[in-house]
Image 1: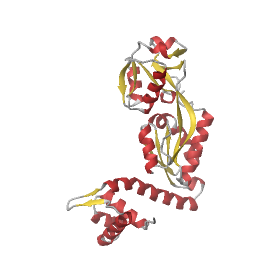
Image 2: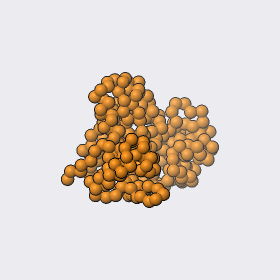
Image 3: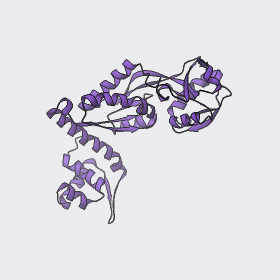
Image 4: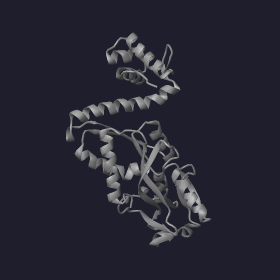
Length: 305
């Protein structure tokens, strides 16, 4: 099946979405309103579904329109980036890299790689969607991003998962906490202590519960949060300790919090790159993906140590 449309059709669609109406969109694109309407109608006919709901007061996206919007934005961004990559090289190159990333990697590891990348390609922009593990996979599968940095693969046959490193779960506690005096801990050492962690719906929590379930061990989750950073705030306040991936722990020598290895057994999550099997990365995204993989391997995944 071939769907015929022009780049201007897509620009017209986005202009209506961004500006909220056909009249303002037509003025911004310097085309007549009837011509813009015909292009939208032609795009809808090619797709076989309406993209916009029109009324006398407003224009809103249909369900199909909401699905199409991020794909259209990415398509235009990649097209422009590819054209610019032909004309420019090195420090003059422009474009945008769009990726999804679990919050822990986005906060502690990703900025260092972006900094190194920007030293070579300072004009490349980044659009980062910091999402939970499941949402990250869905964003990649829908084509909203070029690739994702995630803690799990997927059963989707159209996605591929390239492991980068193992990220072990550790204990974070205040320096005056009873467990802080231990060099290493076993999971049974945590029994009876108040713990903070992410909720049961989190990919991290499901992975951890599965591993501990095999040991027949149940911990006391006194505080459940949506984000690991919130659990660290509870730790700083002296409300308990937190079990979390090492990548989510503070960098360097923190004045209040210490990190302790938990053994017997070591429970880890696998961090890796998720991509569409038949997707093609833009030149800028491919270079960044390769640098990301090389940086993680050379660093040993110890960004949060």
